[in-house]
Length: 387
Image: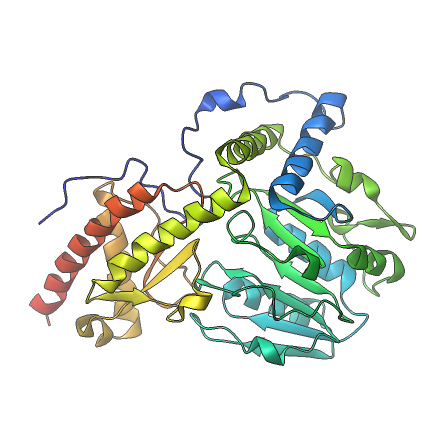
């Protein structure tokens, strides 16, 4: 039977993600609109984002944190274009964004001495085989595959190369091993439910040493330049952004950071994400038609929760038909107002993806799940009817 209860907030997109509970337009009333981002008030707000982020996340005092253009993608590409090439590289990829960084390094920068370690969607590479005499580039959490590294134990404290981590779906949701990460990138639009187009970048002292001691042999676009005449552009890390930021988005980021502090900080945010995953795990354990794309619980993401349809009726279909069926399930859910944007990523195997980040309430996850059962029953009936 069709469920009766709808989620209060049926927003389960993996980016931009749901706003924090209780968000309203009024939270933006103090935005410094029409003021220069280099004015005293504008710069103070940018610094506030940096300082609150450091305090909530526990980022070491000797790491520099900056706000950069073009979301997490911009932050990552700034790093790849500015730091890589002085030594060998290991590229780890288990989802589409990791594959994107592989493409950047091998086909755009065209670097040599690159070792590529890949795993299929839902799996992860053998982390014990990673060579840390090289620079290592990886995603902490696979937004499109629903996998995450289990912890930072696989990264040695003493290493020759840099560790460069795309952590956009992990920051504020998972306990990152900051002391083992030389570069970390993220954006406001994921776990904070903020607005897109702005990225954040945290650099260790080792990463800063690389920036100022190594000059890449290719041109660096203005938006990527963190060094000027051999010296670090320190302004980036004290609120002097390279390009003009949206002060509306900055105000929104401040609001969510304040909310995070009020509810208990990082570990409350982590608990909220894990509770969302636990609700889906309980439902999956009682289901006969759906499972996780990441079968190994130790590497299963608590934010980008990716589901596979395992019913034989679905498995017998061609890949093309499976993709259509998965999209039809998502459309049925959307048409009922029970959940928006839950189809799997276009590069991932056909299935469903539910965002479980900290701004999503577990009660809304629980309200969504019966609708998934209902939608599958309708779609399965249509498959068998015309088989």
